[in-house]
Length: 353
Ligand SMILES: *Cc1c(COP(=O)(O)O)cnc(C)c1O
Image 1 (tube, rainbow, N blue to C red):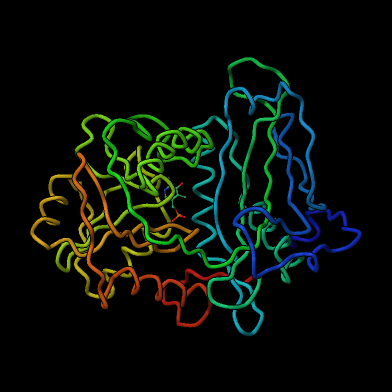
Image 2 (spheres, protein in one colour; image 1 turned 135 degrees about the vertical axis):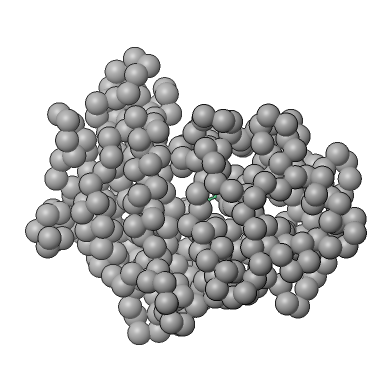
């Protein structure tokens, strides 16, 4: 299908790109010239449109405001030294937003609209993808229930949008985390596996309490017992004991991260022993006491790999060693080399725009 014939484009008057300081970007605060918009009504997704980025108008009774019927995705576009632009495993994001939508009773979005929408949008916005390792254009697809009627049931009108925000390499500083003992992010049978908007709002308060105690993030544990480590809430989590890499299995409480599954694949192909299984808090504390716990790191699109410097549980604190052969550095380099078209991509993860 020819993408441009499907999608109508309302042109901007003038690009605002020259007003943006690409060396001083606060994440998620600056948006590109265009956005993608597609409405669902009368039982189907209507023809999409790409138009100037700007405010949208919704009735105060739009259901998203009352019941949180909303899902999103997070992905990035990368530019190589020849000015070619690439996406990383975009079909995974497409499949996942529809998985999330299904759980939230939102109609699934057509694949051709998603991919053609992204390609058309990125072709218009190529200049917003800056060269250089760490620079990217963050892509935020999302769906909201727009039907103006405050009854607690699925809407029959929705808006699917994609907005783009230039991003620089993100350095979080030294990250210390707390293992959750009181609050939970998700429960059996719930929506933890979905990128449902409400999952994030529900983390803000406990995370604020963690900040007040000097921790940057919470590692969520299983809601029933708080004995097993699950994920970080915007990142999946890996532990290295000796030379073995551990991560929790996916279930309905854990987000099925694309970076996570890429790390697992890279580990297997680089002869790193990787075990996908339940990991108890007791096991990690025990390994830390014995000096066998070498690394903890998070994985996610925003930061790729995020090393964790220390953790705390039951008022006991542990620090992790600084290594010069860290798995975190290895995976970060291998992933970014594929994303930025520096290395071969034997997996077919890279998609050229
Ligand atoms: C998005 C997200 C991740 C990371 O997923 P990626 O596909 O690797 O970006 C992990 N956990 C949660 C809760 C998330 O929302």
